[in-house]
Image (cartoon, rainbow, N blue to C red):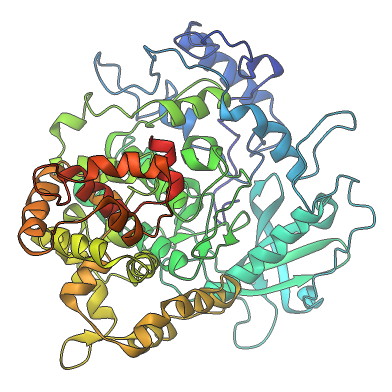
Length: 608
């Protein structure tokens, strides 16, 4: 729900009827989604009529019953400045040449999401999600422990925005030094809280806003109140409008230089949230507001109603978000902070070209596109954009979350850092990788050290920034104390909820030793991410040559299995046989690459 002074918009999201459900027949689906062969103009005319007949602004869709619409119809309706009549220009209506084999992950989403907000019909089957109930709220404790003196302090004004779960109004301080100052108040009716999970979402939203407030690109939180009927969340009033509106006013897209300014602010707040162990889960242009109508007004992230705390090694499995921005791993029910970065990638794609990377007429079709297809970079304006801009977007929209850049890494990408004064925050990924490195065999550590020596200046920039943030000693080394001090410097209460400090305890091996920058690069290097760049084979070959010269040695299969911590197994030995050169008994190039990734008996068995 946008906290802005513009009137709420009707939802442009396509509705998914029962006939739009993915086909359960094992025969592959058609080349396009269900309505792809219908006249596009008929679709837009129907959408227009539906909007005109809608009495409730910001109407929810069956799948994603959340607070703000996506830019779907606005970006690509006939009246939109983003739509160009010229043939061959970028188009959101992508026709897929390959059929999509069922089942689609969208198949199970509808009932699950409706159930989250208590909208399941009495006889409708749904997938249980743990702690929620569907008794229309009877017997639920809807007391939050917030102050009940809202109307003593504030005078509620006009409504400025509305969503499925509440609405936003202007308000004024009634007395004191701030008398007359305007704020935004998000009003959430308790009657809407018909499930335990809906109540927990509100409680969590306030907790997250309270913990994270103060960041330059995050909505300022003031206080939370409640009475018998409502919860009132008081925040700063942003009057500059949504990022979506600004995109439309610019003809549907930004120049590269202007897009960089926007992306830097988005990445800055997303990286901050991720460091604190908070995943937003609903990033989209509607959830970023400009503080004022001035040209260089700061951008603020809003709407943490679907946000959650996530531990560094934890995976979430509930499917939430907005259709056009949802990450593939969310649909597969195993995701973490990387899902936010995917959403940022979708926003960057829209900013640069004015169309969405994944398009279909129904939400089930959108989900299939997200999972199965790749965005196009062939149509205008992509050929005229810089190679760095394209690389930036591609690395955010990598379907493998292990290969996707983090928000902090994206801030170090050449497209961003070459024109901005970058202040990179700590990246929790570094410490996940360090944990894995500390537990690795000496042979794998040697392989990683060889690989780190092949990194380019641009690839080293991020690692240098992270190492500097740890404030190494005069002799250029760090220990566990440096890491703890760095986290304490940037800590909020959110870190307690996401158990960041418990995770740092797993790095206790650094308590009695120090690490220089060279070893830090080996420890904090992501092999999966490096594997996704065009130069990967060159990196791997050069690293193998270095390893062959300094770290390689004759090794027996039994010794290699023991080195990797693998038990005796016919399968394991059969696979490891190819890892060793028959000529001299040393590790082969294949074995070297596999060693870089780390292995387990389970992974070897699956490969075999």
